[in-house]
Length: 301
Length: 257
Image 1: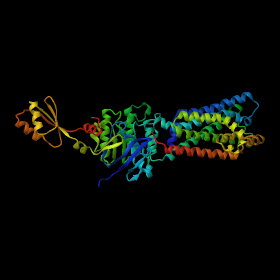
Image 2: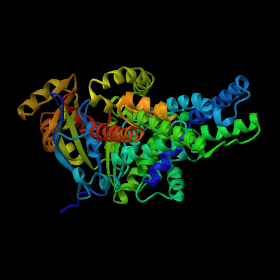
Image 3: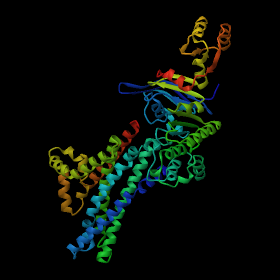
Image 4: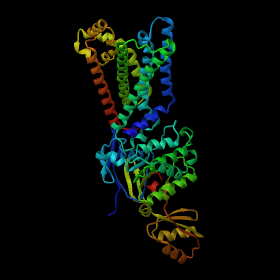
């Protein structure tokens, strides 16, 4: 049985008559990166807020390292690092003073050496003694990441952590997350940037209108969506007849054909076209991207 | 708790406005001492003390109300409330650390008033004329009573701030309360003769400093307000505790945006 660091069970949130979250279930595992996806208003940020007790649940449970947050919120928070939306700081203080504030309030308190190491890790050493009000969005985001990992949390909950990061920052962030995952930290990343999630996540939870429409591995999601066979021939009319004869669904644009694949039909198609004397110009299997799979799930294709 | 208190103290006193407020306290005492000395050169410190600090104490109460509103609402304004609440400390501990810093702020304001009163009298009159321990005791009692009235309004402000999360609204309501309390209090005191239970209304407690002075004065005011000094002091403390408990309950039970 796989270890579970965070278990979210039937998590619900209702505000007035509006059901914001409906019985959300998922789990996080040590060393795994979980991508939390969903369109605007799907409930991603609400889920993270509920997981750290910033807002009250209407139902369900959240356990962190075996501790139910209803009874042991402060104990659970000692193991969680988080970014929620845009990280906010005391602008009139330096980046370092902000981290000191966070370090003092952690349990156990964080040493000066650890602060320095984390500042170096997020490449903010040159600016750390400047007041935060002079920081760019990307620098604030780096400081937010530093603050989230400062107390060596076992669980990281990051809401849009790549907002405002430049390409180098984006790359550094991915490397850092992979390092932390290798150290058995459980990481949840909510993001709109699907390509980043695709590069990072082992597991996925997709929310739509407050409901989980997919929870599982990224590979399983991509596998369950149909890949496509891309075909171009020198005789489109004859090709269409052959494909119909093979009882395959396809879409055609001039000499370009797209055929959804549940199994590998390439040998069968190649043979049939060859038997019909049709010349093949292109034959390629197109894998489903996370974006395609995501759009199919949330119905925005 | 020590770490939280330390954090709150740093956050408050890294702001220049806090030091500016203490400077205004200091200058207000200096101004009033100079004016009193110019107007009544024959009076000594023992007679002047109250007049010297009266402007300063009024300003200090206003500053303490502003500080109380800022302590909580600025966290919501900046969005740093999330930064605070995702650390392993409960809402109660966080608010209590803020209360301790508020008490520190009250102490700082009244210490500055007290010390500057000594300093300016020494500068203008040329000595520390502690005429009698009686007068010193009365002065101390006045300062402590005013500090508790300030704390009454400060915890009331915390209550508003926890409920409304708007700094300006919390400041406006609490300052309005402070300025109209004597007016409403005097209206209510007229009704106290008719409805005795009204003597326990919170605004009546803010008359605490009126119960200081000569015996005849104190007797007349006690009769009018329906409470003696000790009863009113106790009432003030009870309201401070109730306001703080209310602020704590609201702070712990509302969702954080």
